[in-house]
Length: 102
Image (cartoon, rainbow, N blue to C red; front, side):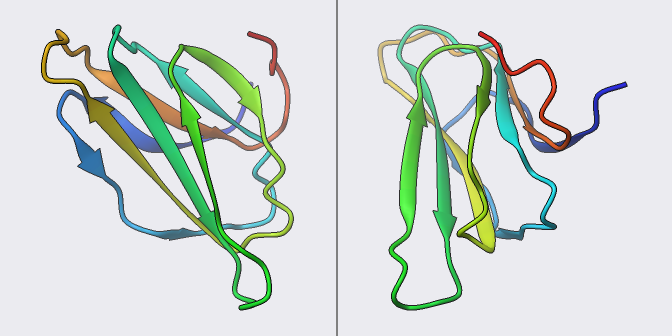
């Protein structure tokens, strides 16, 4: 069975999640139920001031590999365009790296 950590559950509105510390076994992100005009944002930061943070945008459903190694914390958010009909989006952080194909 694939191990995951839930980041957003059935989120319909614009949201910005709380910062979470990485545990070292994160391998990717899975986005489920994303409507046209919605985007999931993954922001990562490092503890070292010399390493810049990164923001990644996902505008389609699927599982995506991601290299978390340089970072120590992350947060997940969702944006909804005003003219879109939102879906209840769920985002999971993949912990074992399996099934990372779209």
